[in-house]
Image (cartoon, rainbow, N blue to C red):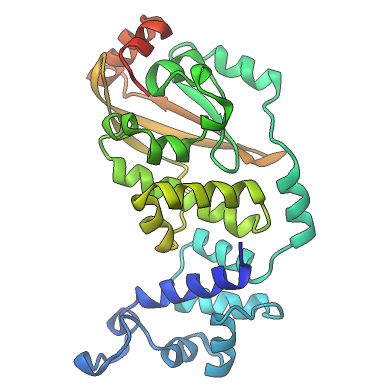
Length: 287
C-alpha cells in the first residue's frame, strides 16, 4: 500500500469530521468551502506552520517529530488508537515490519489445548489480517464450521463481507463490519508492505460495495471488549459479551471469547448449543 497516500487520506478524513464549533472557532456558514476545518485552522490549533502541515497532509512525513505528531493528534481530537495509527503512517519502521509481515502466524499447541478445555465458552484465535487460525468446538457451533472451509476462506473479513450467512447471524452486522474494517486499517498502518493484506483488501474492494465504502472512511479502532447480538438458526437470538485478549510475545495474535450473563436466556441458549453436535449445527446452515 502507498504509505504516503494512506497518511494523506487519513489526515484529510480526520480534519473533515471536525466542525469549527468543535474546537471553539467561529463558523462562517455558507462561506466555508470545506466540510470540516481548513488546513490553516488545523495548523493554528496544532501550533505548526500552514506550509509544514500541508506538506504532512500531502504525505511527506518522513522527518516529522513525535512532538509535532502529538500536537496534530490533539488538534484533530484523535483517540489513542487513531494517534498510534497516525504515528505508524508518518514514522514507519519498514524493515522490521516487512520481516514481521513475512512470518506466518501459528498457534502453539498449548494454546489450542487451552481453548479446547473451555467446553462451554466459544473461543477462537485471530491473526493480524483476521485469519481464523484456531478455534474450539463451541466456536464452530456458534459461528461456523471452520474445519469444513478451505484455508483461504478462514478469514473473518471474508466471512463478514462475502458470506450472506454472516448478515443473518450478526444482528448488528453494520457495527461488526465497521470493527472488521477498522482492524484491517490498523494492520495496514503497521504493515504497509504486506502483500497478503493488500491482496485481501483488493479482493474485498472488488467483491463488496460495503467494504469499499467503509474502507474509504479510514476508520480505525481497536475494540477489546463489548457485546454482540446474534441470531443462531438453532437456538435463536442471543446477546453475548466478547473479550479480545493479546499475548506479550505476539501482539498480532488475538484470543476472542464469547460468554453470556449468568442466568440469562442467552446463557441457556449457549448451554443448549453446547449439547448439539457440530454436524447437527452445520446442517442448519450456520456460518
